[in-house]
Length: 107
Image (cartoon, rainbow, N blue to C red; front, top):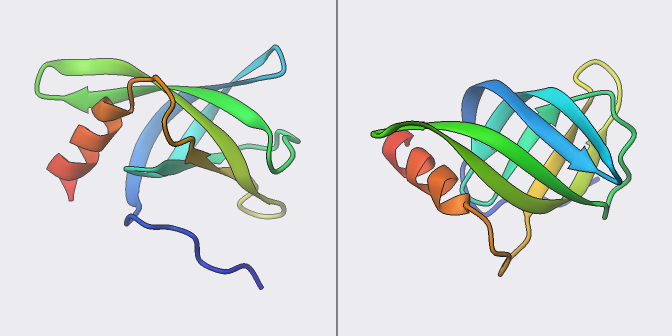
């Protein structure tokens, strides 16, 4: 059984994001987000540990802004709700503050 590794509550999110890895780019449904990660509904066969970038349109007070999020796949789910759990990589230079602000305003 997988131990729970989440440190922040996940919030439901309706929208699409662009997942990029190994020169591939896919448009995927976002299921939920938190200040330190997100879950994408996808059939992509991206292995755990793979570095990825996610471009996520995030609504905010100034309108929708595109956040660049750098992370890695921490769990791959197969079956009915196939998808990827992605943890944001600590210390990366990206625009995760947009996601953090959204989560804080929504929670």
